[in-house]
Amino acid sequence: MAQQFEDKFHRKFYYLRLSVTDVCNFKCTYCLPDGYHPSGQKNSSFLSVPEIKRVVRAFADCGTSKVRITGGEPSLRKDFPDIIHTVASTQGIQKVATTTNGYRMDKQVGLWRDAGLTHINVSVDSLDPRMFYQITGENKFQQVMKGIDRAFEVGFEQVKVNVVLMKGLNHTELPSFIHWIKERPIQLRFIELMQTGEMDQLFNERHVSGTAIRNQLMADGWLLRPKAKNDGPAQVFFHPDYKGEIGLIMPYEKDFCQSCNRLRVSAKGKLHLCLFGDQGIELRDLLQDDIQETQLIHRIQTELQSKSVSHFLHEGNTGITPHLASIGG
Image 1: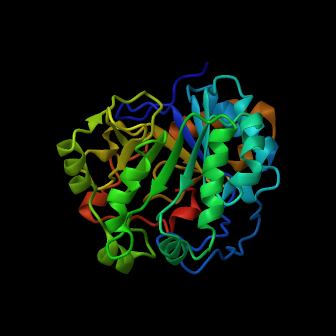
Image 2: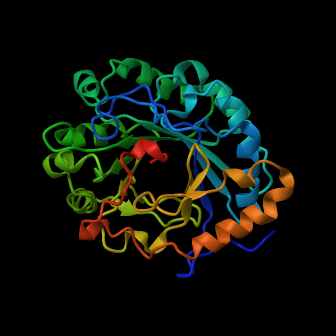
């Protein structure tokens, strides 16, 4: 194995978030409220399967053990099962996850599991079909719920459900969500609304702090679970009376970045050292031949030394990311 990816703050990187498309068919209020619009840039094709194979192998050879395939909506790619298989068959990769809006799960999640998918996250921002439609712009609540049921039927032991709580919209549903996981092995992941370049007004009007939720959980007997080295940023809580778990992702906490263990590669082949604040480093020119891996690893290791100690969201910095779909959230 080549040298473990590590930055100048001695953070090691075990987790790659790999976007395979920035296209999405939902119009979520906090991400793409006006729907997806192509960038119109030249050379705008998304990474091919051979390019994906090379970038994943380079990361795996430098200690990465978990890959999350993201979008946009990754299942919009017709070769999505091939992508999963390519990632899963890479030596050293132990976890292959995806984040999806769930609209194709009912029909395809079995294929994904057969291809090698080990973990799945589904975005469900409301348990009320009308509110679901208001937030996502799509009347597909029942379809997504069937997809979650189907995931359990094909063998997933746990499904993670991502929820962005927003003041004045779905924030009053917290008790309903918690009741929902009483007898279901679902890990609810409450994600704080994040301020991006295009969402200042929404953030100011809708942001709900995760701290109050955490305080309520702890008062109700929920206990913090220890993290594994390739886990994401969630603080995960469990309760002896519940089959489900609750994860809190709170990027506005001052030390949120202290345990950062993940890097991002966009669907166009750029390395992003953080979800916020950088232009991205071109990798695609080094994804054209297997013999380029040494150069690819060297470029990533070199650029990693410029990774900042923090995204400084807690100080009001929103970076240049226009919306979360642009580099896979």
